[in-house]
Length: 83
Image (cartoon, rainbow, N blue to C red; front, side, top):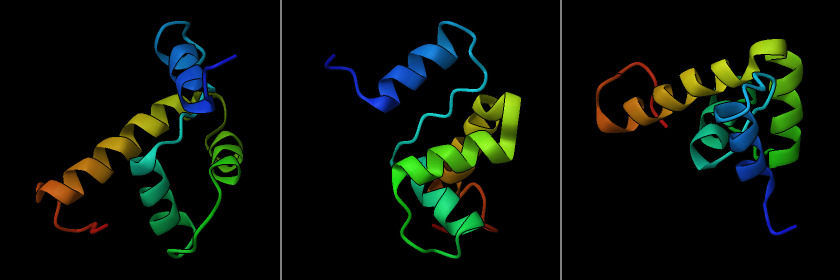
C-alpha cells in the first residue's frame, strides 16, 4: 500500500533483478507513444503490458535503453529522434 506501479517496478528491476519489470514514467510514455503508437495517447497500463509482451524477459533492459533515447533526444545529443 502507498507504492505506485512505477516505484514497485523500479524496486523489482533495480534491486531485485526482476528483468521483466517495465517501469512507466513520463519519458518512457513519450518515447513509446512516438516509436510504437504513431504519437497516439496510450494509457500507462497499456504501455506497460506492451513493454512486457514486446520486449519479453528482458523488458527492463529495453526500458533503460528507451529512457536514454528519450532523454538524449531532448538534450540535443541525438538529432534523429525528437520528442
